[in-house]
Image (cartoon, rainbow, N blue to C red; front, side, top):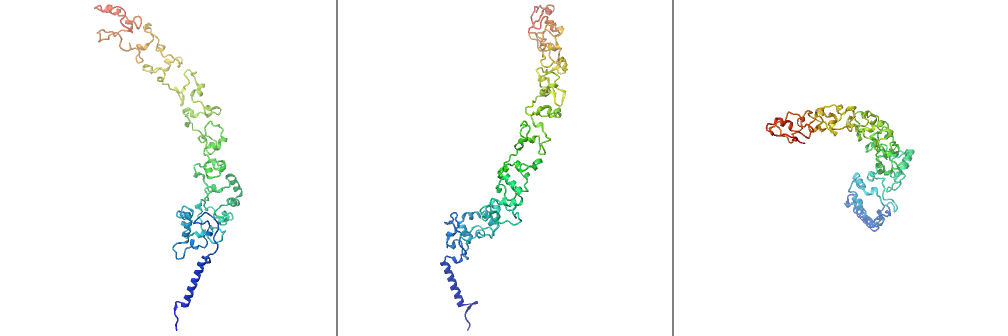
Length: 464
């Protein structure tokens, strides 16, 4: 007779399996799930999350963290219910937790935060996780191997607690690499290495100062950092170092501020000497012969600021005129050639016009006098004999600079010209009427003998 079977199981076996399953489930329920508990929960207290300050307060409520195998919700989802801030961070790759889950999609909370390891156990363990160190502002790119040529572990720097950084970690490791440099560096910049170093060797051996605004050239290349960055303790201290020359070289400045503070106007980083100075950047530009003059000729006794700018201060000894032309040498001379003399007479109080323009200077300045020379016509022209002293010395009343032979300059007041009275007064000389002075004239000399109508006669008649 053949018995009834379900596969390889008999009916009795199936009943036994069901009974065992119910017994186990009932015991698990009755014991609060302790049969599945590998160890006690952490009792370390923190801020209140989900109504508790530690996992141990959850007690036997396993389902608060654990989801059923057939449930769509995962354990990480249960973690997010209490740890809401972390859950929010995981949505952004810019945050530490967000970068962790983005770079490692199979990474769960339990990889870094294991539980059931005892009441005093740490809740953060990184040995099994690839922690994105850059997310906390320090890269491990330059810290792959220790001074002993071994791979770094978290404990090498964190000494058992990854939430803290052992302050002597840098000093201990780098002292093994180069003791003298490390000690000197600590004295110069302090022991807070992370205040300047970020792990990507920004200020390491491959640091290039020429990537910054103040590039090192010439003799600056061999200057040690602390000469410019004295007592710098942070990146801000390093970046705030003054960049003007005088800030570092004030003690080497022999000019006592006479040339200002822009050392680069004369000096280069190749050396203090030789010095160069572009005089055309100053208010006194060098032109002509001045370019060939030695600096000491004008800047005597080491003085630069306040040096006189007028010609006479330097050229008084060369003044052949003994000061009679004043002190403005540039009114006649040019810096291209001392002997090249040009003078614009029209800028003086005696402008040249007419026949005066073509006269040689010596015709008026016969004695070599220029300053204080009289501008009266008679000073040069005198009183000709044919005037017989009758007309005074105001030559311009009758003469112009265009024609010395000209007669009265303009219409004659009080005398009608030809075409007016019909009487022709032209053709004669001034003395024909002005027999005694310029301002008195007589008509009798002409009209007594030439006037058949008896008109005229007597003295007067012209005026002014």
